[in-house]
Image (cartoon, rainbow, N blue to C red; front, side, top):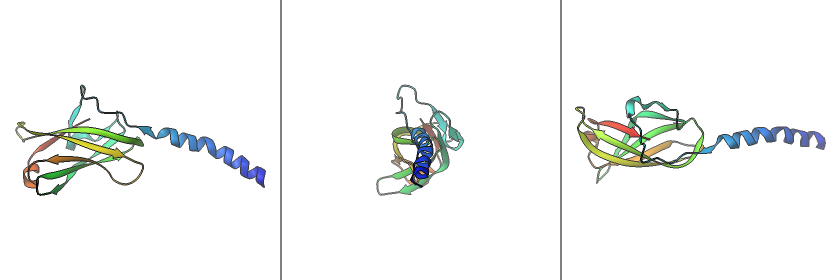
Length: 132
């Protein structure tokens, strides 16, 4: 009976190691080579193993609007990473640049938090380019 238990533990150990190895650290943002995509068209970012969910969630506060971009952690990454975003009008005129952070974990919602200095109604008429 004890031998069977030991054998089963030994057989499970490689699977545990594989799962642990699949969780890798997310690479930091390379500020000299930032790639932008329009948020609504980003989809799955193969280089990061993240899927971008659009539209963003907005919460208006006293000093501006928090913008939360949800990501699905398909690459099972962990760690902290910076992202950039640019806002422009429908005509393409630059409005504002934003910096956001995410702490990736294995559980819960994965949100990149940005801060826009305008009101929620102003944001809704803009195009957001997501930089990674």
